[in-house]
Length: 463
Ligand code: C2O
Ligand code: CU
Ligand code: CU
Picture 1 (cartoon, rainbow, N blue to C red):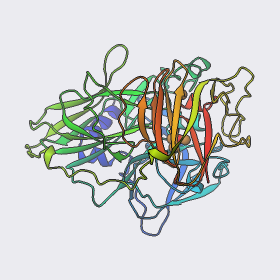
Picture 2: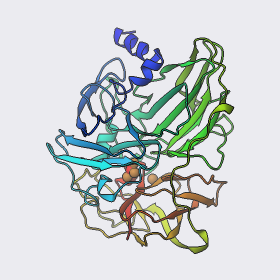
Picture 3: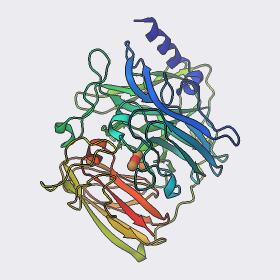
Picture 4: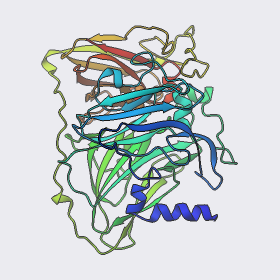
């Protein structure tokens, strides 16, 4: 084992220190009155023994930091692009003004090299969110630019440890350098999978947790392709939030019989009571062909704190608009192959060079194409979106700017928790309800980035 591995192992196992070292320097907060400076830049980092070159992050040698915001407090970030490619920053899951949403041409012009954009918004919801570019998305996300954004609330229950976890994969060759980030074969099916699975840019980290203590594990699936099937066997815990919002319809604990499906872009917060016995471990794993794959371990350290999950206060509700189902209009959306004559996505924000997918039989021709909205929604009205997947592939369908509640599916029992992404399984039709309470043009797309970039994109207009 190289000394570098030793150092990383050490950081990963030094518990609380590791939790705050996730961005290399601990969580980033905006200092009073000063905007937070976020510089999109190339980075180099040892995901394996040999450092990987040409990564994309917000530091030259560390993962994108965990950003910590406060509910109800204005947040300002000045994003500077130093890359020789266009970019923009999107704040996934946050309900914010349209002009801050970071979608090229829909809400802003893309940032060229040397350009800056000031993002300014006041988060109204507490919870676990994330950020990523929305231009040249395939390449910049695959190379690293996906980070967690946590909105704290003074009403949050007290945990002994708060542990954000960025789950994602990498496509690396033998020499630990990037190989092709996408393939035509993958884009036309379930996407092109990575070769290395990581949690917080580390393969199978071990985190120290206080024995008998209460841990909030904030899991974000930020991979471009992978839909996780999470399991945490033998743990004493509860699912407390989904896509950032407190669970209102109980979700089964993710065990071997009922893995928790977390689609690309989704988050889940788990409240766990660490084992009371020093040295005992809990494992978070992904259920996948060939058997479960370990993502991370939690190891109990110290004397048993003897804390009890039952003592945890529930999360405070976010101010979400309740759909009025008695007065709802139904909108139909079908997700499937693209018509054979569909144009290839324009290249402004990175074209993959082919088109495979469509919404309502129209393949997205590109961000700068001037294409109109897929549907126009009236401000304040309730809509039921009937989402029909006519393909044999899974599609995590994401909407910007608003959140919705699943109502029913033709394939399974769905839980009625607020989400920003509908995890549509193969051939599934799901109905979800929302109140169109946020004016603007809101991107609506599959979060398997190869699908998004090869046609499975559109936008909804709320006026
Ligand atoms: Cu994470 Cu357009 O989304
Ligand atoms: Cu989003
Ligand atoms: Cu898809």
